[in-house]
Image 1 (tube, rainbow, N blue to C red):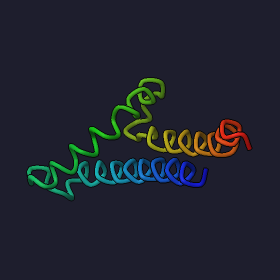
Image 2 (cartoon, rainbow, N blue to C red):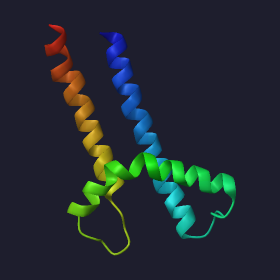
Image 3 (tube, rainbow, N blue to C red):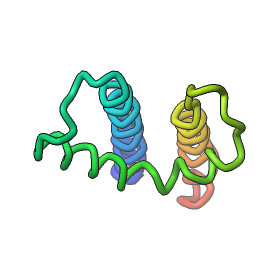
Length: 98
């Protein structure tokens, strides 16, 4: 039971870190702080985009544009935190028979 809880927490927290890194990367790119023509920077940005965009895209379709401010990562983080508490607090103990 503890191993399953640890795995769920770790996966969700790792994805949250990737969401935050993606948001910071997009700000740095938007303000021209980093050079996206650099091969390593491009690879990091592409990786973050490919990992986070499939989960953010449906949220962006629902939420209206707020004048250049993208709050979809914040909403996804809240959804992930809620899902973690729901899974670890209610569903997992019920499935494991506790």
